[in-house]
Image (cartoon, rainbow, N blue to C red; front, side, top):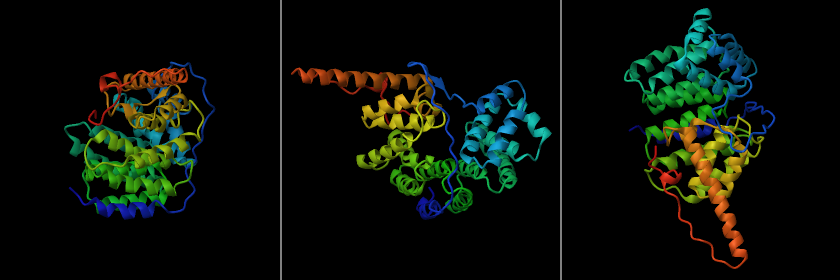
Length: 359
């Protein structure tokens, strides 16, 4: 077990550096059917790149990532690199063609570093694969000195390699020099804290709350405390976190969610995670509002952390929220006419409620 208390002051101090936040463009709201559900649906920029990759063409993916680098759209760049690497895990011919055609392309190097990291997590050759990722991450970082995404990959790599806190502090300092409010880097740091000091959820909140407080109102870092709340609610170990702290984390994420249009794929993962947290806190009305804002856009995270069928789990929770709201309205009507409401008991996991031991 490493001493991660040493991590917290550098993390918090670095997150307060002034810098213009990454631009988070949002598209027009969709008009989905009430019961439509799409898992990890790409936006209108990523979709064509994935279609082309399925056809063996890498150029649209290369152009997409080059545009994010030119425009310093680091949040989009991080998300697109993850999605492209995830696709390459099962179909990598297009990526191999790209790598051979442009071996020093920083965008190809970025996808390659993420790809090797993704392949390492469940592999029996994990240590060897992590070693192979190191030069790719270094090369990607040298590709564009402004880019924080290779440093997010480096932080994830350090967690997998069980690196010590001093090395992680150096990575963190390099990351926030490039973008002090990059969400992916903050999540990577939070996950390192949780993994290195298992059960110390207070340490995670102590990192997440000041980072969110210092971030711009439209930064995804506003959702970082809710990410810490999710980790606590699904962990089932360590000292209890007060309910007020969990509610405050949810409230901050609710305020962020309200800044984006309904049925928008960009904030979908934040909203899916928030909906889970709200259900666990028995805040059914707030959960129903997030369900409305999510529209059809289910995301693998957080549901793949508690189920082998993330879309099925999303649909179960959606049904439970609707049932709770319907029951509450029925009880309210009965109270108005002088009848006693029918007692309702919390549903078990088999009925859709997620519990802390599910992961």
